[in-house]
Image (tube, rainbow, N blue to C red; front, top):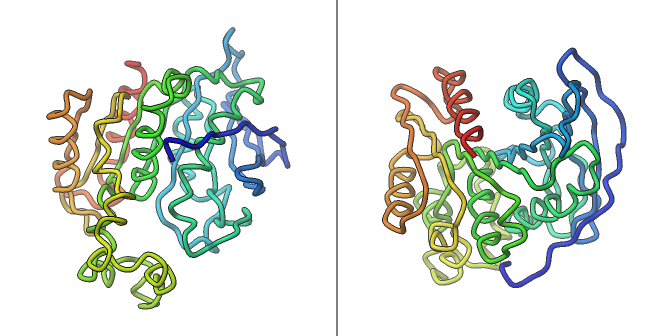
Length: 289
């Protein structure tokens, strides 16, 4: 992924959803690897700064792709940053909602491509400052953000545009996440134990093909990250164990990266009990950069 090129696309405004006092909301589309993908776009209703509005890209966590909704999924966090003056984009990723895909079996591993192609396309959004981009990622979205940062670390022009990243309960190690002992605990496999059967037919399991799974795990490429990162995690998270964020933070610090870790006692995977505090901490971190 670090060696390939990422290409800009025209941005099409498909429809306007609504307009409030603070921002107007739209469904947009763009092309990624020739696939038509959709995204939510919220644009502040205030006067546009000279260089355009700073951009926050919301990278959502796993939702059953057919149940994912461009408008309503992750609405709280998209509204939050929109009300704070950011132009907010929330890409579906390929195969989610009504966005196109060619291969549903392995599409998760191409989600960072969709985000990077969107970043390249921001210059075609007149209201956006394509040189002031912030990334937010929750759960699987945190995994995607880490991969985007690792790829950007090898691409100076892209790197210069991304100012900071915030992770909430990120997935960091796919070798562990898809291990035989952990797969039965995944949300998507509780109702369908064969959910990843086709994936494992192609890639084998992490136990059977450890080198391949290590190669797609962002925890193994942290040295390539050059962007400041804030990590937020709840101690009572029953989906992604909080010790994985401690490991991520420790590894980043050992590599002399700019990172901070915020731990929230008695909080679950979505930081429900401290959501307002975590959102404010995320905003404060973005404003530093």
